[in-house]
Length: 206
View: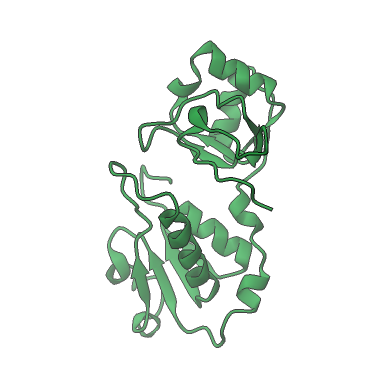
C-alpha cells in the first residue's frame, strides 16, 4: 500500500501523511541538483532504504550532516562502480547493487501483444537515420522514435514523469528491438527480456 508520495528533489521538506509519523521509502535514485532543490540529509520523517543510488554531484555530500547521514544509514547500495568507489573513499559502508530497473517483471513483455514488429529508437545522436547501419533498413520502416529528455530547467508536474515512464516501459516491453544511448532505457529492456542495442555516445552516460 502506498501511503504517500516522496519527491526525491524535496527530501528536506517531506512530511509524512497522517496518521503516519514517518515514511519508509526506497532510496533508489539519481541524486543531483537537476531541478535545483535536492539536498541531504532528508527530513527526519523520511526513512530511506538506500539501494541503487547514483550520486552525480559530490559537493552534495561535503557537508558533515550529509556525510554523517550516509555513514549512519547502513550499507548504501551503489548502482554504478564510480559511486561505489567514491562512497568507499569517503568511509561510507557500501556495496554494489546494480540498478533496480533490472528487476522489472518479464511477464510485462511476455503478456504484451504479439507479433512484435516495431523497433523503438530512443535518444540516439542522429535518430533512426543514424542507426540504419545497425539493423536492416526494412526493420526501421515502421519504427517508433522518441526522447526521454524531460528538460533540466523547468520541472514538470509531479505525476507527469511517472505517466511518461510507464508509457515508455510499455513501448520497451512491446518492442521487437530497442536501440538507445540511454542506459535507463537499455537496462529496463534487459530486465524485461527485450533485445537491445546500446549505443554509448562518447563522453555521455545517463
